[in-house]
Image (tube, rainbow, N blue to C red):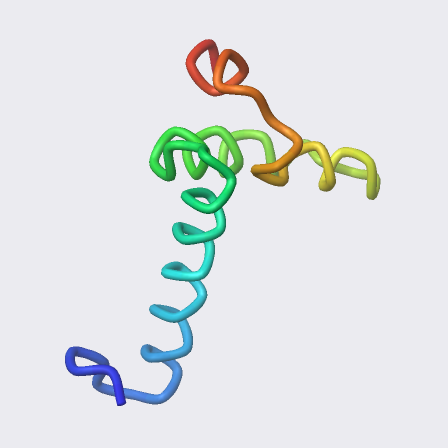
Length: 67
């Protein structure tokens, strides 16, 4: 029961975003910087290794600041 979700799809979308943010926090990565980095790099990712490299536990803070 999400307070501001009008539809089930909206609640699911909110839950996915909250999950991404909390995963970044759990890995000591600043969520905004990580999401910005990931969303910029995602279109050029073509292999499993590229996708895995974007996971918050595979990144260092220096990579996010220079991205």
